[in-house]
Image (cartoon, rainbow, N blue to C red; front, top):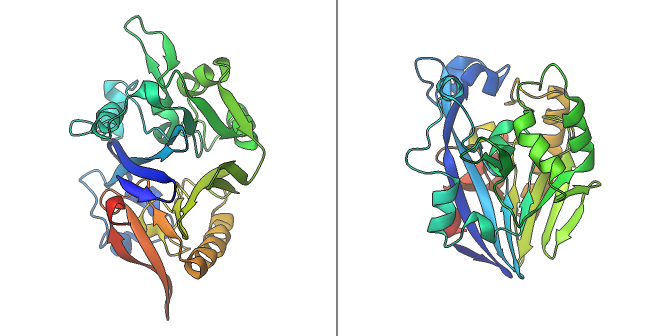
Length: 285
């Protein structure tokens, strides 16, 4: 756990999975990206599903929820899902909490690897919310976007993840950037998917940003090192350039959701652009 202003922060590991390395790095040649992240025999790279738990001010706030456990054997094989060592519930328990303690769930966006853990099936196969006491915070524009879906993202927006949230009466739709709670705010970006929200936590003169799929791993810090999954790659490049400039200028620390080994980096300006420095676990922030 990490004291951070009025809050205590916990990294919540929900498991690992694999995605095609070529898709994760778009136009970047394999000869380059494979030096940084080695692919498996099926060209998949190992990825984390790391959530952020924010404790304090009378709330227990979880940012994203990982993949969950509703997948079948075929899905697990395709995506190399591995939750043997850690999963959402074991990580919450290690931090001293259970799903019933979570008061707020902030979903950066509704792709299955970010929101799948928000819903679960009971013994009879009925869908319900994993966090029965939590308000679920999603950008309104993104919620509407996910309901319409599109050919590029259809496989990422799953009804089994979205419908229980929509029917729960616990959905809070947010209209753009702003403060959610004291010291906790969101900003939006559109290159990866429409109206993805990044979560900023500020306290004691410091800011930590949960960068979600704007910068999925530390290797993706260079603006052109983007994903083929992005719906608007040129917009992602522009958004990363703007974000990285502001982050470096203000000494923001970046918290990665999908980097399997690096939790946090700081940034510095070099003669080759902005780069990540001092990779470290959250407890060293």
